[in-house]
View 1 (cartoon, rainbow, N blue to C red):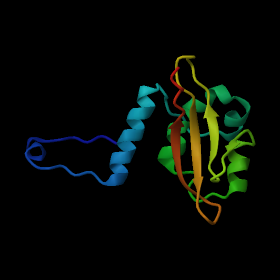
View 2: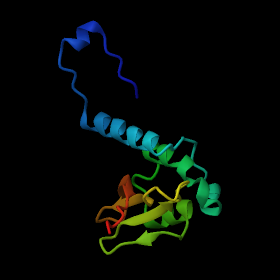
View 3: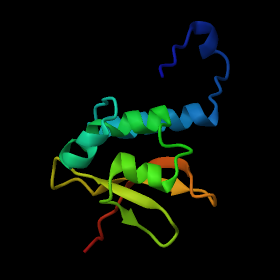
View 4: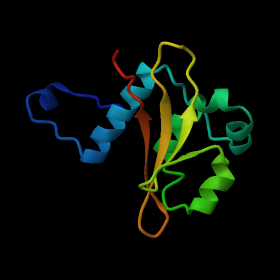
Length: 128
């Protein structure tokens, strides 16, 4: 999403919805990591994990996982997930550099077992 400001808009307060603001933050984060976007391909996601970075933006922007059950997520994304005590599932997005912190595409489920949000989580390295 691009926001074009005119002279008139510059003199007024421009308000973004929370969703627009979050989308802008997500796009900035993806650009910082150098993650291009491609239309999601389930087979390639599962068989070529090193290419997962190409699909993250499409997965998040399209809301394709929102409302899906755990079984549907397993069918689309495969069984190589990390499951946490709070019911959150994460799939690793392999890094292209050893210097990057580990990243995960994280699915948050509601009480009905359906995806309510999808985010990128970056695991911070412990400082020695």
